Amino acid sequence: MKKLIILLLLALFGFQSHAQFGKLKSLVGGGKAGKKSGNFSTVWESEFSNKASRLAMTNENGTFILGTDDNSATVLNAEGKEIWSGDYKKITTNKTNSCEFQYFIHDNNGGYLFLFDRKSLGKDRIAVLDVASGKELWNSENYQNLLPKDANEDTEIETVKYLSELDAFLITQKDALNLVKAKTGEKVWETKRFTGSVGKYRYDKASNTIVMFNYKPTLLAALFSGFKNQLVKIDANNGEILWENEFRGTVEKELVTRKAVADLEVRGNRIYFWLDGLQTYDMASGKKLWEVTYENDMRKSGNTLFGGSQKAIYRTLADPIFTDAAVYLVVFGGANKTKYVEKHDLQSGKLIWQSEKITGALSMPNIYKTGNRIMVQVGGKVQVQEIKHRRTSSGLEIEYNVYYDYMAQKNGILSLDDATGQTVWRSERFDKRITDMIIDHDKTVFVGDGDEFYAYDIETGKQLFDVKHNDAKVGKATDVIDFGDDVVVLSEKGLASYKKADGRRNYATEKISGVDYFYHLGDNYFLRDQKNSKNIIYGVDLSNGDIKGSVSSKGKGGSPVYGAGLDITADGEYIFAFKGKKIEKIKVNN
Image (tube, rainbow, N blue to C red; front, side, top):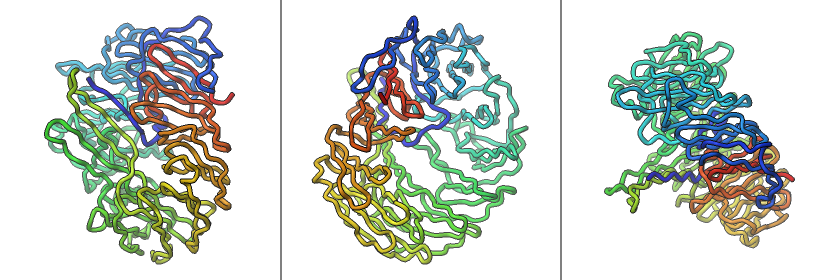
């Protein structure tokens, strides 16, 4: 039995999302209304005709609500009325069925449902359905070996990438890369000069070109005996490779989410490629201009002898900061817990300065340029991904965890002079944890530890105030939220709010505990408690700490951003709860 527990997914997926859903049944006249969910109002309830065992989620506006199991799907509208329902075997003309993986690409017009049906003897089937109508758009048996054995809806599929800018799929095969129109399945082009999976890409509309890099896919690794690292610029019209360059390093994949541990950024006529350092290329020619080499931020443990677990740590190094003239990097020194901040000339890559040695620092997750200072955060939460294997009475249980945690290290903040890199001031008045920094109007920095909350003048390092946060009796601080004239400190047992001007406490509330993440959607703020295999979303008024209501997940499905059983519209006005056969639409603001 496979048990999937996603404790925290780091980044929103934007246009495309994966999730879980099941076969639905409409209620005549729409869903029932008026029931309360905590202090939220229920707009309506509808019932699925089967459980949401595969996907259950909505598009960003809540106008199409999709539910599937392995063999069927149903779509409801914003009023809870059924739009369509059907079995894949009957909808698809190639009898695609028993879909091990389903991929929901949503938009305001419905979007696409991409179905993978893995067969033996090289006869895998795929089909794409129109979510708005339930009709098959196209199907194919030309693309094989697309799924690894352990594929689930919370991992990226290495062999298929959707390009929203072109409304098309890039599909990796052992001998070619194919661009396929999402609506029709028409192959626009294929190229045999690019091998492997697409790691990240950047699209330029003006020239209709794509810059992207490759990596060796897990499933097809044995098929790529001649694999080489490729950074390419490709003509999106015909697949012509305009230039290619072989980059240095190996692209790793995150342990659970399987995302590439590398990134691309295009700025003007330069490409900045982050992989074991920063590599810089000319956009027109692909020529490498300069590079700074340093280790990336991945840490892995191996398997234990009897199936035990794997663990990896990510988000330990701050992303590069770019200005018109320079780039600022956090780099490893000679030991794992020794780091530096470096400033490099953006045109030549020449080192302008290197900070003093910063020892005892496992993580330095945030740096900020503010006026003539570089503010450096030493310590803070890192992302942990782990896979646990346990033998139970029902067989082998696999548990996937993604969450944030503190690591044992020295914590502090440093203010560096932008011209010289010299330390102007530092503070190490932090216990075993440190919150992220909040920079206010380039003048003040706010930061907390478990028991205290501080404000410093950025220019001089003068401590403006020190608030005994433990007096708020809401537990140790875990995060901070920038809220206008206030800073809200998210804590183990609740919230406390402080005035930026003088540190005066606005309120403290113990109404919630176990919260480890927050979301800001539209004008709404949400807190999430996902510990001990539960998933609760709270709506909160940060001006006074009042809890608007809460929703507790009891079902499968939901967006991977918000966790099992729950999805939220992009404006934060509605929550959808998926509970077995039922779906509930909940209004956040009464």
